Image 1 (tube, rainbow, N blue to C red):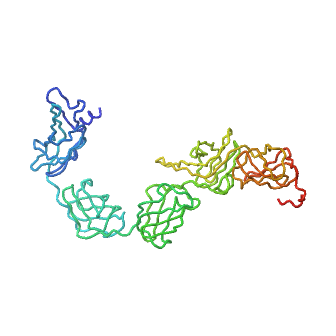
Image 2: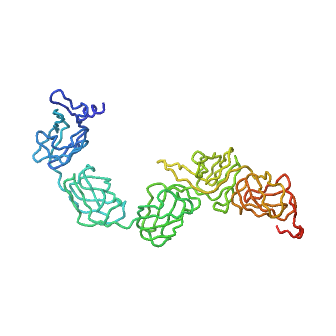
Image 3: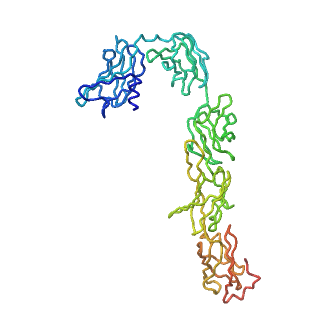
Length: 480
């Protein structure tokens, strides 16, 4: 249906030799010819489907005059209007698989080539990219698509065109050179004077390129920066950042506390301002978990089914965009996110088993292109039963002998555990989450206490009996 509509719209007729049809499977289809006006030497673009990739397999004629084929592809051919050609219908003749086909396209209006543009003057004669420049002269075209204006770089955007005046915007990437005006891919005119491209702010790269958390240093590559740090202003979603290093093509800043994802803008005093092409993503940062600073000497303990409180920055407010997990070399456990604020995430741990793993937190920003931030890691975190002392084996022993204290909520980090026999510290030989091997101190018989950093203290329900306690040391002389 689409091919049929295109055929009707373009007035293309198809004829074949024998019983073959151009609409047969694999047959060439002519879809468009652009432009439909031209002059000798002008290139036309023929678009279609199934066109021969071999120029020798097809001829193109304009009102009976054979055209020059510059390139051939299955979906596009480039041909030139020959000298002496007249206005008329364009015809493509193909032969393949023993079947000849003729595709007739639209009528091409052939006339004289437009004259070369004449530039009398332009103003202003300098400015940064974005400057609006007016050219005065004659023999300009009113069809903006038929003209290309350059300032020593990429094509400029033409905002107004008349036979005697052009207004164009200097694009990024322009250089200090004589501007040029190309007319219909036929004539190019250079001005007598040079347009000076003034210094301007350009942002060409970021490192890291994806995202950075609060407190991280970000490097900006570009041009037009001032070597005086105070002349350079950097804002993230409207919040100003501190510039820590700068030269002509490099600027470094620190992501400030309170920064959120949004526009990154660099403003240089006396030069200009520029915004990065995409929103700058401020990544989440974990500052502490359960009130204990991450990276401290021991892991963070959470009881089974307990709440893990994660403090930091840029978590957002939507629980549906935040995920929390614990991971070790064996497996990964997903936690249930209970509440989210920009600086706090509360997640509930699983109830059914003890877990020891690294904490992972991820945030999916609300950005149009579905950007996904890498997970933030911290830890370790141990999920276990609440701290308790279940008992000891043996139930009595002499000072200096080994005893195993068993329970839950312990830690394998021995320096974060204290075991007390009637208030007297015992030396820990080995530690795990459920067992502590200790040396019985010279203490009175009584309950055994276990204190774990960040988890509190638990006491056994029954007393441990110390046999043969050394009589030379009085109770008052025991150092705790």
